[in-house]
Length: 386
Image 1 (tube, rainbow, N blue to C red):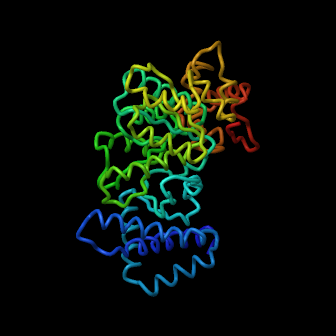
Image 2 (image 1 turned 60 degrees about the vertical axis):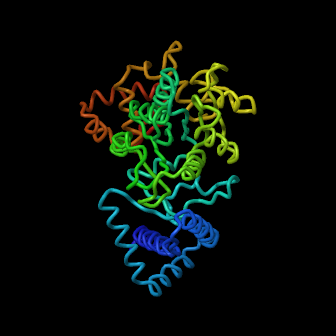
Image 3 (image 1 turned 135 degrees about the vertical axis):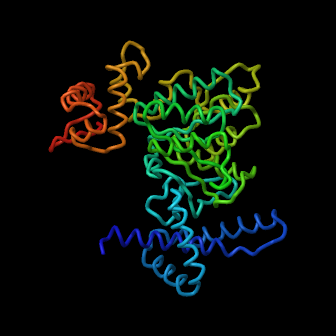
């Protein structure tokens, strides 16, 4: 058995084991008491198991013991994992190497502990490049100006190879996800409910599109978990943890965006804020964040100060102050760059086939991008982002 397959088997077994251990909740008639006990039990489980994360021998022993002592529950957990996979929903535990490392780095706030399980659709690897991730959050009732900023800057950021993370809410969140998709980029949506209680229903089609175009929709909540108010505090912290910086666009004083901003500060992430009219309630929370030390963001290039790798790419794109999406030779090059980010060092022939273009046309476009310092040719007629 290969090392990779043995690691996959252990990962599957440990996910099933975690489901078994989390499933041993005492049933209470009172839902609030049941939820409280469930959270306490989950936190105790995390405290006991997280130190074992890099000890495969002890983890294998744990998996073997649970399989023997709680065989029926273990078999049921395996069936649940397989049944969800058949629906395109995958489950991993924090023992899995694909579990986002940034979720494990919590420093403070609300007694936060990493979720022992994540349920997701799509490619969870989207969250692996922490230094390229920008969270964008803001009002669900943003005006046209706020929505244009969220979508436009998201599109420009994604065009440079960055990943947009948000919460799939109405308003700014949805605009940010749509901007990333418009650029052919990837985006991650973290929701505050289980998939069987998906919220908000109005954005279910957007979630499907995110998955179809190479992104990920994920939740730390079990399938039937409703969108309870306190769930969004945990979801907001994950959004902040996932990203090098959080950008706030139009946040009232009392809003989920402020919760995410506070989590970003507590977790030692960069907090970026778009300022606004002091008489507009949609900006009161934003302006207060700047007042207490958040970075004021007046234009898109201000964001790149916190993403040096992307700033280099942007420098290659500059053309007389035009937007990134209007430089070079236009949409063809942006499409090529977006496809190249997804394929990871393809051959020129494979890239041309994926773009449905002639090999010679793609070679000419690659030459232009190589002169701009954005791509490099590799031995074997392979190509890579620079």
